[in-house]
Image (cartoon, rainbow, N blue to C red; front, side, top):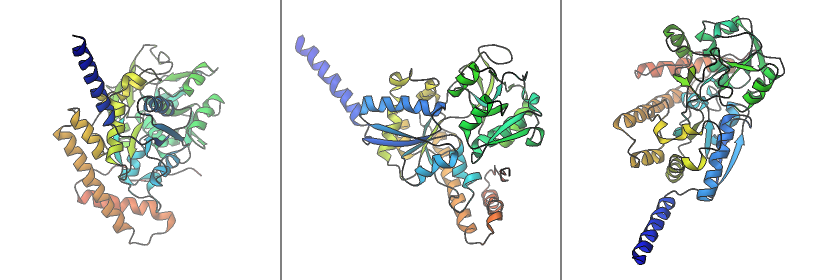
Length: 390
């Protein structure tokens, strides 16, 4: 009997080793992330601890204060992955900070995302008496220089209430972290972030405190206005937030808005083995990092949306197929997005053959981009520049 037990134990050990062996990760990985006070940074630490404990892979996290500083190491092959926000989508589309002669449409592959029970929106100082977005009229709203993701989402928040930047006081700050600090310092009244950003603990405990504003899901007109600005949003019932009860009703949930954050992307040069191994490592080791910080539940396989706005990396697709999660619809979505990328590449090549003054570059490129996308029967979001204030 003992030899049977020993044989079964040995078989189990070999099976476990085989499962670990098919995750082939380099000894060192580097990925960029938001700043050290962001939820994306703290989650990256949790994932890095898992990678070290399970696969002996050291993760170097490179914080960046704005979208360009997070994407540039990826493009320069100084980082393997970007734990990005929606700026990855802007990169694929060649818009905003990517609508210049140094970037243009940039092919990017998705691996996996954090899709949890948290939300994203303007966090508002709690000493103002604000309970809805319309109450922000005349208030001081942070604008982060060089961070179109933050600013576009802020614009969409205002649009939800039928407001524009002309209805508020724009407070220009150097980056996202400084936007949050501006609330603490009494220099701004609201700034965009996710409900799990660690700095919310400081704001909540400060004399100003904070309030989470709801996005009523039954207000179809408000949602239509917001989605016209930020088509990647979706409604979510927020049950995971720092100071969750600090919302107008005081309940343990409220109607919110969200999009995946962080979004984990790599360039086409990222090897299939690394993309497969990292995706599998994160999707199958949830128990090892689930308590590493707030919002880690969003990394579960069951939460992944495999038909979103970015094509999936072939290595990641291999894992999702093995896990029985990859469908014909998912493949059709990725195929369509890859075709879209080809249209964008052709548009960029045609545009670069023209001569355009520097101050007219973005507007001219967006016009050519729109022309090519329409000719291909594809959607044309982001048709106008998002102007930086003087």
